[in-house]
Image 1 (tube, rainbow, N blue to C red):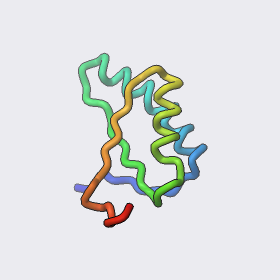
Image 2: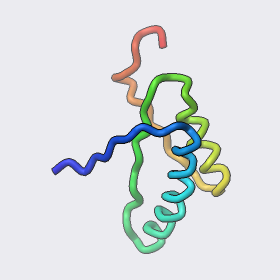
Image 3: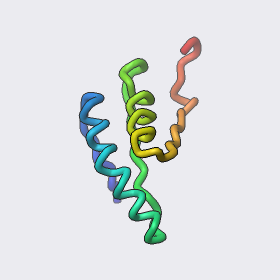
Image 4: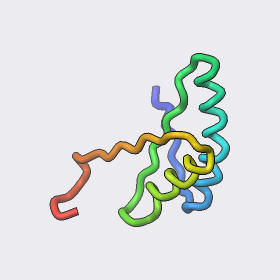
Length: 76
């Protein structure tokens, strides 16, 4: 069973989505549930990390950014 949902968003839409899901994840954690993880992927330089950090800073919460080094080309 694949629960993956894939869509294309611009950075402001990603920020809007994160502003919705972060409080939901906080509530899940308070209730003893695991939060939902989101995979944001795209070309280098399109603000993925910046958007995630900015929104997490707005909520004064931590963020976890995992870089899949297996996908990095030599010279990146």
